[in-house]
Image: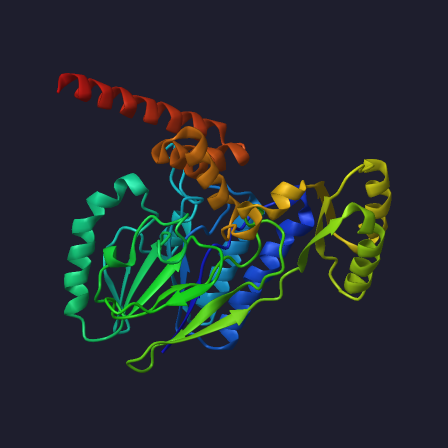
Length: 384
């Protein structure tokens, strides 16, 4: 039996306000669906962040619907949970529920185990860090069910695991139910897989299918997993998708002309115009001269960005030891600035994503919710 494990599709993301970038996401998403159909997978798991925002545009909604329809036509079932990007904070019904109600796909995010052709599948929607203690009992309950199931057991989560990325960690591997034979993860955008001695199967992140804004501009590969569970041992095959190439370069100001020539030579034969970033350091920098040199790349690139960095920043730990996502570095800096991990988590992980995608109502709602919670905590503290 073979299934696809796809995550963090972020359908509807319009990066840089670019229509081309929106279609890049749809392009790689449909590649993953086409490959799954071609390889005759038995089912597909979508491990959260299906959409980039809870109220996606019509094109994104139709892209997902058409993909699920194609899977159904080829007798391929699918299952999904919700990530933080799918869930509205103003208690609106998630768009993805429509696919469940129309029986295009099956929603499994409430932790209710299902048996699909002898495979036990359990999923949980995104769990906020503050909510994790109340899920301990639910994890124990599904672990007990998994221990009694003779076949393969798949747990689907949209969470950061500390052993994969300490900046994004919401759970430790020891917090996970131990009796599952495959942990289908979402949330982290770099693909990775680890086997822990205290778990019965691998913990796998396929990563996002395309570079998102929070990841910055870099040379990287994107894809998804096809997982073979025909035998007792799980076999993972990570499949690379054909994404638009992105490059980040660093140069001294006095070598800019030479570097631009080298970049032009490197990208001249790339069929789909790449995205390029150039970080420039030096003294007596003239921005007009930079602009003149960078403009030579405009016809060869979809977007070409440049910024000036100081030598100190270039050599600092922010660049030498930076985490996999800009978000995680922002979190670290926010903790340093506020002196509170709780405040930093709220600002970076909950409030900022809403504000950056113009979800003003949702942002206002969580501010009100957190203020009410703060007042209650103060009353309890005073009462004690």
